[in-house]
Length: 376
Image 1 (cartoon, rainbow, N blue to C red):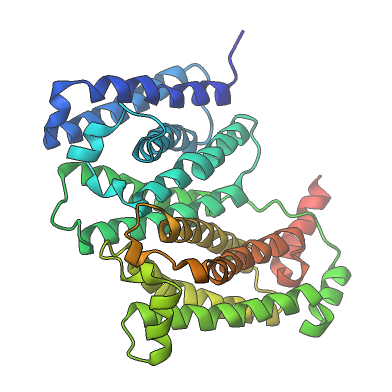
Image 2 (image 1 turned 90 degrees about the vertical axis):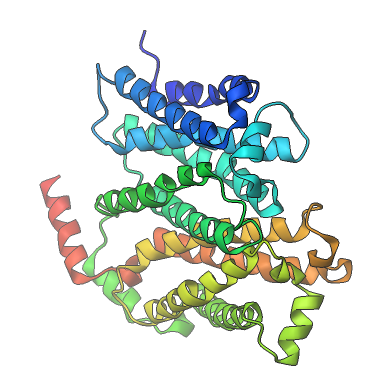
């Protein structure tokens, strides 16, 4: 009886538990270069095992191998975060000490929690859909935004923050997780969209509606304009703007932006230079019919903001964050409200584009859908 591929991937990912425990008790794990070598060796052996196991019936999609290896690293990240918060012990002490000491920071722990739960679930879902020869474009784009933004902020924060002088060779293990997602994202974006064929007249009627005739879009426009202002304001705060409002905000609501680990400051600058232009483009996409790119970029943006806000909120409130950089008790609820709304808006926007894409469909996409319907 053949074991389903998703079950094999799940069991293989759990092998990270005995492997990390064994390596943690190996004397060689006390050498920084040995830690790098062990990390590379484990990933190479894992990849070869996956290729060997799939030799009899290799999956048609090469991303199966990428997601399988990444799912293994997700379990490692979950072990790291659980151990740093005191839930378990004796698994990854060696790696935190001689590999990546910045993972003990609240931001490092939160990014590991996200990778070990949300990314892990996405990998298992995408592997399952690959094994069933089903599409996973939407999940892949959501994951792409999430992992890319997390790695950009994480790597930049490691270098420019207070741990910049404590970079060990194991830092290089993060490089594949920056470049492989780019290649993966290109492959995912080339996959066909799973669009239900729409009648041309139905699409035409929808695209003739003004914003006030589309209540949800009107609310989304309000959110987008608010998010633009909030993103711009927090960007100025991160750049040490001398305005009194910026000074009051950073001390009364988000002192975490002054944390010398630099992750929150880098996060706000990434929002300022990358999220802000996208927010402006989304306003245009909700006003101008036929912007088919909205279907993809809202998913990428939703994944990125969900991950970023989770780590930012978690880091701001984490008990290991120094008290002077933690959110003051009297402003916790306003802080949570602002940041949760900032995270929720992109999820609703992406879901709106995914569920009701009529306003964003172009004539070329409609012709392609009609041809597919005739062929079927």
